[in-house]
Length: 291
Image (cartoon, rainbow, N blue to C red):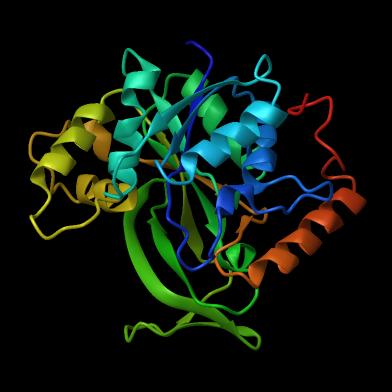
């Protein structure tokens, strides 16, 4: 197998945050989220990346990477998602930049998963295996007390994904984690496994993604990766090969942090500083990802 490729989704509009989330300065030397993410990917074994941007903020992200990254270490190409039609559409925007429809890993550009989680997928892709995802413990994904959306993963005894349940309005309330979406249960366990949009997809998924975009309803604004995965698992995509419904789940016990709300920035900065002080992260990317 060739070296694994990571598709990084950086085309979001970031309406709640109010800035360019991938460039939010969370590192102790001012590095952005996407900088630390890419350095973790490099440490995990990824040497190729396609970054999907939008026409508005994309030029700023591209200029930042051109100014800072050593692209002899991580070979980066860019793709543009012309309109916000969801994460499936964003992945398809990367297709021309990849060539030959390879198996890929996919991540957000505004979440920091840690090198161990990324290494699960790099090793998985290198082995030539099928679809997979990384699930994180719910409590390890919450920053502050502002509400977020989380996909609760249902996993069978063999470690395979058997369903995804999107819950909105998830937030901390004292020592509890509660949900304000009017559904039951309204309290969630801290160790409940959740999807943070960290996936590996086999090369056969490209046709599935195309089908999902073509089949979307006229009033359906976006088509999302977790929804397509859930439809596959439950046999709702006609003609899909049975093995494509099988998603291996890797369980991570590490933090997955990102900036969703403006108030998250200082909290994430403090978290990264603690990782640096503990020796889990370098204080500067100079000599690694940076020139």
